[in-house]
Image 1 (cartoon, helix red, strand yellow):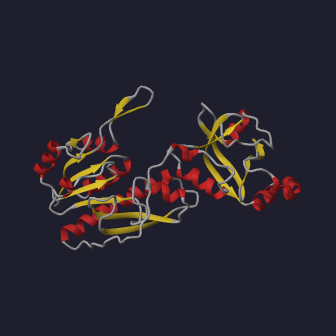
Image 2 (image 1 turned 180 degrees about the vertical axis):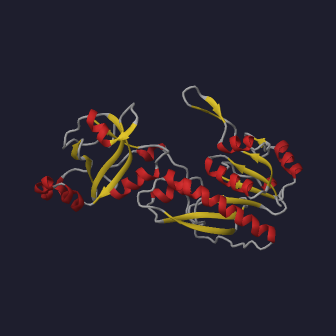
Image 3 (image 1 turned 120 degrees about the vertical axis):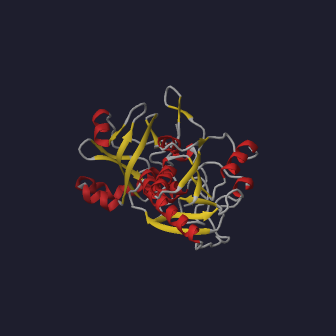
Length: 331
């Protein structure tokens, strides 16, 4: 059985570590990011990978940095692993670490490489409205997700699926594909396919992405934005100077909206002249509908300023919004 050093940080990586333990691999040590202050009290919280490792009595290393960290590199060499498995660790490994294991460093990446190299592959697949994504295992090299591919597994993305839901699904696939990969490596039959020159990137998300641009984004793009940034950060707009966040929405064609609400049919001819970001209907019984580019945005889950997330019917019970109100692009 292979001797493994496992490097990872979030719950996505924890699933892979669990799969290795269940497959009875010998985990020599776990390397994860340092504990981070969280919540109002800014109390230090261990990563999901560290919490699981402690539960299973696996030695844990938490270096602040790995590059030029001679003491840490020497410790890893002493452990003498056959393989280092890296899953969402959060740091780029220097060549000195990549050279340590006899059978190489293996990475589990949440996309079908060479698509979406980088920090946020799962989020960008949803943000871009992709129908499929997947998980890839590869031999690591010094580049950013540029190594030779071992295995790939494709996964469908549901039309309403959020980043959070897809993250969970792919984390389980990641654990399964990692075990399959290690079995092939053990047998000496693991494939090795170079990625080639055509690739796309998945850079880190920025906070300013979360604001809706009613003027330029289509209803479909707003829908994908809400799905893609859930649960990381809610997508927001301004209602009478106050920030409101959307956590769940649906994109409707004008015809779908007009069919559902007969009383709106008399306004059908006016719809194209109404400004994007205008509230068309806001009633506790029926919901919240906003005019957007190329369609109507139905809001299902919402969060008012300094309030909790809630169903839109509960929100409208306590907040009156007049039809014709225009949601602002800027504060």
